[in-house]
Length: 318
Image 1 (cartoon, helix red, strand yellow):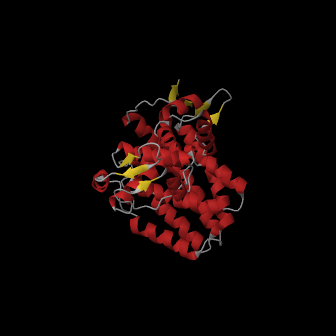
Image 2 (cartoon, one colour):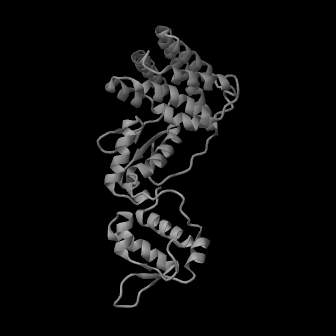
Image 3 (cartoon, helix red, strand yellow):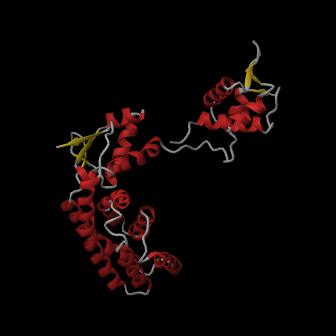
């Protein structure tokens, strides 16, 4: 999670003290810190309190205000290891964004093993955020097709073999339509690079992170160029299985030592680049239907081998 604003100000000041840009005996004022970093006085005040806690500054005796940099502050600052090479910014990621990935990962690691209930209060308590933030997280999980709102709560449906098949059949209808829409619009250089990357790995053992990258490049990065926003939205919801594949590839690599989808992706991209769009759309459709059987095999393997761990904000349903 991104550091609070006052901590980033603190690190920036520690860095300045360590390099003696702010020297021993210099006076440091709350209002000047706020002006320098273009922030309110509240985070500036907390940053200075943190400097005092670390013995880097000493409060001015009353009635004077502010702080004096301590004589040994440069050495203390250097020992903290807080030199800050990155440029300071006041911009912060939305709170929901800072916890979304963890909740998404927790779900995708478990949906092959049953149905799960999530609640606003559970997420809010687990991450010490408001229910509004928790609601934002749940709304975005819904947009990705991972959860549904059943009126009395949010449910993550079980990713059974039947559900996986249904999702792949839906994708087999939607994604060829998107491929047809973008045909001729993708720069040849982009297509050539994707094809070249696949050529290098076809027929070899590829780790799960790279497999996930290739899935994303074709099914999301390329097809989301589609000009029909409703088609894009429907594809996103149907592609929830892609999120689970990040986990599947990591724990079921022994099923397919040489991943078959790589050669299928290569064929689809080469046909698309060369203008054989009808053939490319049909190959994409067949690829998705074949992928359904492979997903079912991965789910069956996971259920035999994976041991789940509990989490506070997910409740398994019977």
